Image: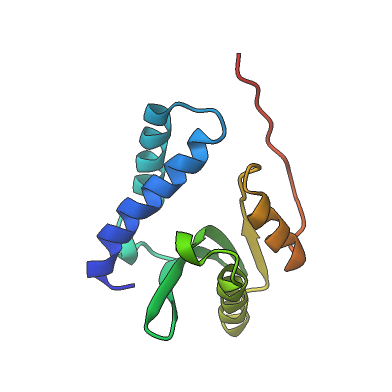
Length: 143
């Protein structure tokens, strides 16, 4: 991802993240604040933040989504992966994740972790099909 692509991507990614936070029961205002704070904390130097890798994914010349991972020694963590809304459920998410695995393998990374929101059933199914195993579970109750 180029520097010119980063700012529009980040704005879009923060909105997407905030929407997922709202789906967990948080207010729109809290979700927007959490998204902004999270991205500022995780990417203080934008696309130049050490060990963070952000790519747009393409099918030919058509942008189909993006991937953001952080490398920490022999492990990587997927912070965000998304497929453009009109292109979902066509195998692009699987292709992006498989490309991530190939990149990690080529870079001597032996483990990939990720977080998936409980409400995102489609993503949970995809990750399970790709061999990801649940390693924990967060729970909450609105009062």
